[in-house]
Image 1 (cartoon, one colour):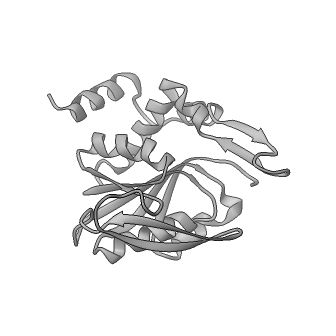
Image 2 (cartoon, rainbow, N blue to C red):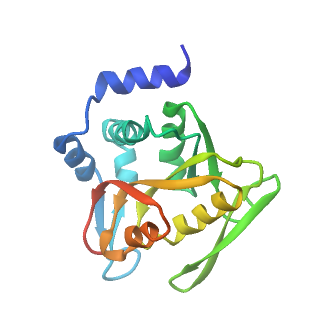
Length: 198
């Protein structure tokens, strides 16, 4: 029995279907920290979900079930919390996991893509041999806010010849416009929970 089969059996034995109760359980496991990192911000702390093994397992299972029959050939996770959700999803789907990282963190040849931040720009990188032409790629991250990080990630994947039409998140902050932004790029967003505000 492979590791992926063991994980699937564990998930299937403990978490059966996506129900409103499960989604509420996941949402309730995410702590809200007011005025962090600055006044007026309600920070959604996904690390509290990670501390609860049942909530963490449920979130992975729901993402896996959503994309099990989608023909995904690679899962890409964005630094850093995207790794925590993307890697187990890839394992359960039986496909490779590809990290997209900040500059200077990947050892082989890379492509880079800049993106806008509130007060400047940042850059992401991917190994040039991580995605093959024709790969159907699912992008996974913990939270969707403005969509800038995922837009840059999708550009990297597409530059390598991969197809990206889906992105999955634990949390969506719809008031910040990220989902609408990604939809204009041909990327459908799937989120387990939504929170209003910033």
